[in-house]
Amino acid sequence: MIILKKPDDIHKYLKTTSDQGALSGFVPTMGALHKGHISLIETARQNSAIVIASIFINPTQFNDPKDFELYPRTIENDIYMLEKAGCDLLFIPNVEDLYPAGTQVVEHYDLGYLETVLDGKYRPGHFQGVCQVVSRLINVVKPDMLYLGQKDYQQCMVIKRLLILMGAKTEIVICPTLREANGLAMSSRNMRLSQVEKENATGIHTALIYIKEHIVYTALKNIKDKVGEILAKHNLVLDYIEIADAETLELLEELQNQKQVVALIAAYMGEVRLIDNMVITT
Ligand code: AMP
Image (cartoon, rainbow, N blue to C red):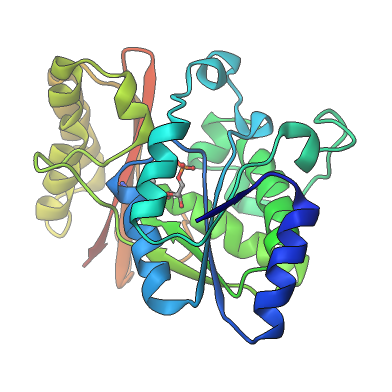
């Protein structure tokens, strides 16, 4: 695996491969890699001649400075995991490489409704930051395919919109959420949890399963009340629980004629904010 830090070096390297017609697959990450990230690399490996990953903890997407400061950093192990998974190229830029004019004056993207709900509402500015970094990474890497995790459901929709706004030809591939055996969605932030907290954090998955099993014949309000109880029992402090149309992310008070809905939960375990979701066919 080749490791490069400078956008110009990435351009030079990828120019030779794209001249040869090799399809490229890109997996952007913030590092502290786990098997969920690696599953994206493996899927990219199956579909693309050149697999590229990036590790960059993007300062502009953290609405909470403490969250940025405490974000796990495990670069040596990340490199080992990527190499083992067959990644060809790793891009590790510095802040100045991606934000040569600094992080204060940055572009604004019209994300419309998507930015007014769920993490858009609860983490002001977060999705602008995501777009700022993803647009920069896409402009450097210019991948044919972009591999994203369903774990960040709303982020996938935001990035879909970003690619339209950018007029980029990159195609998105959404990969399923990898979970621990006990149901907890894998996340870099889990590294900040104690063993007991990790066990309690499975309450989010338990709540999603409850929703799946009851959604067709129980009023959504009652479901949300019950979810609140399940989370509280697991020492989780709720940010939001919403049921939304899986295609538009329109929040639902009642089921209408949706073929698929998505249940989305954000909750705190101590100081660590966790998100998870489940797509449900009704
Ligand atoms: P992050 O490093 O958290 O920014 O995540 C980088 C990519 O990995 C994003 O597309 C995430 O959605 C994806 N990802 C994170 N956790 C998981 C997981 N448990 N299963 C599958 N993909 C994941």
